[in-house]
Amino acid sequence: MKRLRILIASGLIASPCLAQDLSKVPPANYDESKIKPYTLPDPLQFNDGRKVGSAKDWPARRSELLETVTREMFGRMPKEPVEISADTPLIKKGALGGLAKRKLVTLHLKRNGKDVPVELLIYTPSQATGKVPIFMGLNFNGNQAVTNEADIPLTKSWMRPNKNNSVIQNRATEKLRGSEATRWQVEKILKNGYGLVTIYYGNIDPDFDDGFHNGVHSLFRDPSQKGRSDDEWGSVGGWAWGLSRSLDYLQNDTDIDASKVAVIGHSRLGKASLWAGISDPRFALVIANNSGCGGAAIERREIGETVFRINTAFPHWFSQNFRKYNQNEDKMPFDAHSLVALVAPRPVYIASAEKDTWADPKGEFLSAVGADPVYRLLTGDGIPVKEMPALSTPVMGQLGYHIRPGEHDVVAYDWDQFIAFADKHLKSK
Ligand code: GTR
Image 1 (cartoon, rainbow, N blue to C red):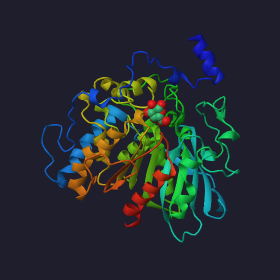
Image 2: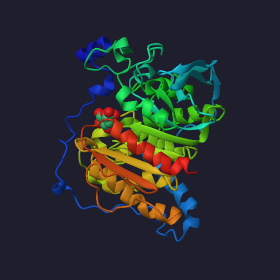
Image 3: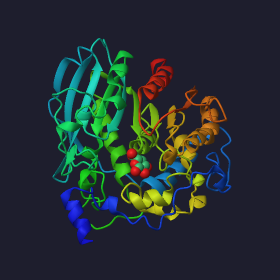
């Protein structure tokens, strides 16, 4: 324990979250033939066994399913309002070689004498004549990592350590500038007529298990409070909630069409974008990239990362109730397809990568298939195929999916598909 504290203090390991005891977690299975037979709960069946007969019944079924997923998985977000104010935006015209208008906006989320600053990096196309649709998502390495622009301030928030010493004592260094540029493809986004709003996720809630006292949790908790109730929110809930509060602010941004916001996230932030899209119907479109366990991948398959593993390695991400399903997925009254269905009728795009077996690409595809009946009922459209498409063969109905070659990441190819999907659903509106 002492050695652990020294390592944490030295920044060599991030926090207690990286020191969870994983010894009881069985090694990951990657063999399809070892998957136990399972039946997915029917999203179109009420808890009392009645079936959803028509689209008219869906809102009632949706609200009980949402209640179940909230209580059992992501945890409840606070209902109490917070005060949101913004510093005067710092505006730069002709950013990115003339392509963009850039705005840096610091929001202040305030409650009970606490103030959580959240910094928005906003790019909109220079040539835009009116409000534009946007992609909006959290980033891993700070706003200064999203492009190579030298004048975006380094984030001051807590950061997980990384391998190449670009984070020192849990704070960003200049080495991180531009480090996520390939993941954001800002030029492509702008040239296709979209804006981008991005926020460092650690602004909203630092990604370690601090007992829920820092980040946005601090706005709602007494510092003396210990632990949390079984259905209370965790960090994924915090990140999604922070996206919603930022969307509150964007309602009045004169450059942005707040009715056309595609919320996007990768990996743990893909879990957050999915939950944001579920919990806040103002998000017009949802993209979950390589979101895996706790995101779009069917948990009952227990391939790659499992519920037990994720709740052990990241005890702060989900509600405590979610731990009931450690090695007990069959008892879940929902699965990842239910999460996708909860976004219906709004479009969802799920993206996988061939080598990202930890996130279970097939399980990610199957959640679109499992949500399809809900989409068909509400919109007459769903996922166009029932079999997993071949590599680099995107399918796009009201639900979309692709798997591309390569690793766990977001690359230009992914953005080509996200933009095509957004063109289909947001531009045509
Ligand atoms: C892994 C985690 C995944 C995914 C990933 C990421 O450690 O097991 O669920 O969230 O991190 O966010 O990069």
